[in-house]
Amino acid sequence: MLADELAEAAVERFLRYVRVDTRSDPDSTTYPSTAKQLDLLGILRDELSGLGLDVELDEYGYVFATVPATVERVVATIGLLAHVDTSPDVSGTGVRPRRVRYEGGEIELGREPCCGPRTRTSWPGTSVTT
Image (cartoon, rainbow, N blue to C red; front, top):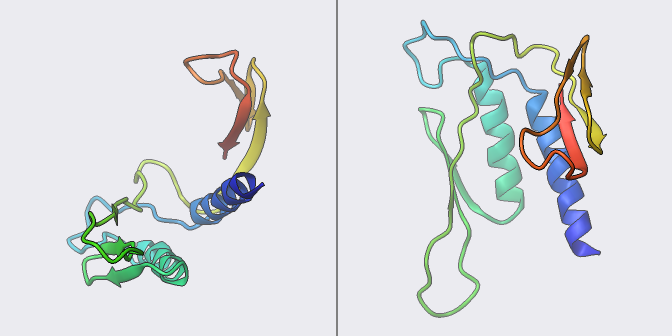
C-alpha cells in the first residue's frame, strides 16, 4: 500500500536526520550557530530538490521549499518550515535512534525507564527513541 511505503520512507528519513549533530552554540554570533547545522540543512535541501520542490538554502541557514503547482489555475503556495538546531544542553554527537513498538507500559531509554506517551497510554504505535 502506497501510504505504508510513504510512512516508512518518512521514518527512515527522520532516522537519518536525527543522526546529524546539530547542537546549537548559545555563544555564537553566526547563523546558523554552528557549521554542523549546515550539514543537515544541505541534506534537506538536496532531498527536497530531489522530490521536485523548488528549494533555496540561504546564507543564514534557512531552507525555503515550495511545491510547484500541478494545475493551470492559480492556487495557494505550499511552504515548509522547520528548524534544525538542537539544545546546547545535550550533546548531539553519536545519536543512535531506534524504533520501539509501543504497546503500553514503560519504554527503556538507556538505563532509565520512561513512561509511554502522556496521553492515550493504551494506544499502540511505533516510537523513536535515542
